[in-house]
Length: 399
Image (cartoon, rainbow, N blue to C red; front, top):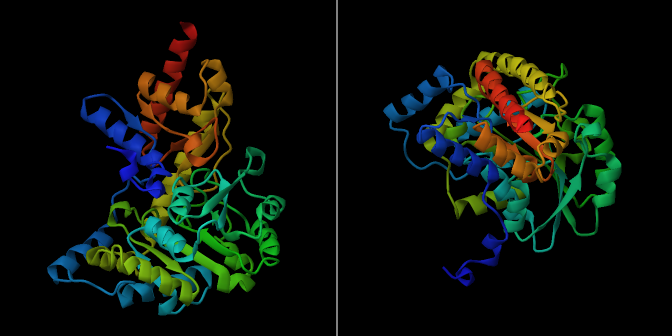
């Protein structure tokens, strides 16, 4: 096909690397290969029974028709209650939009607020879809590279240096995918002091991993740290990670009612309402017993300890222990050099071929010479995966 048929917009972005690697791993596994995938950001737990039952009840009660574009009123109220109970934040129904996953929430936000040439500040490492979605809205991603010494968190100085008269949006993700690190209240307060000087800049805080963290402190986002930013902060969240509901595809956004109204307009002309059955299940997730979240979190904490220990046993790999999520983001510069490879992309391919373990290269997240390891699987599988990598390295270095 002649590329002139395709829009410049779609040609400017690449497919999701994480989904591509997960697809390759699945194909190899289907072909009989003993492949372990540590690439996908998906809990290995099943959706809790009471949430599944709510979905089943919705089907049996014939709750299968269209809903309001922005979500079922009872779900919006459950989200409002969640914000009040968990985050001490007050919202009204007109300030809430329910979408088909957290990804659509950010896509809607970009389409509703970004004009051509508007700049969006994104700290790297970043979730893979932030820059492409900015580009699809004709905006300009401004990538700010953080470093391991600061636990991959942007500093106030870096933020201020990145701001120009074209800056429209600042994106912050805590706990972070891919690094697993969490901004504490003081760090967020320090960033807020910079943002208060620039009243035209919107802030998107992606809190998708809010409940998967073990810092010992209560979760806070930038709005908790600085309430004066209330009119400018758009909170993105969802049920996918905390409730093991990735396939149910429910995300939500809270913020300024005029921006939410514009996002609703975008959604009305794309997908319309999210899946009705999934919405009913999400009410049960948010308003029901939260014991399931705590139980899954206990397992993630143990896996985080194990993964950090296993990775740091590999010569040429350095990894700081994550504060949350189910990812370990490891510096593999020494291993790349040891194996005489060019970069993290080549290392990821080599590991998949030689050790049959699928891992996402850091380049996909804007940070080369790193790898993201997902530990959203059982401890025996994690140990087996790292053992296979160690054995492949030993075979290579002996050759």
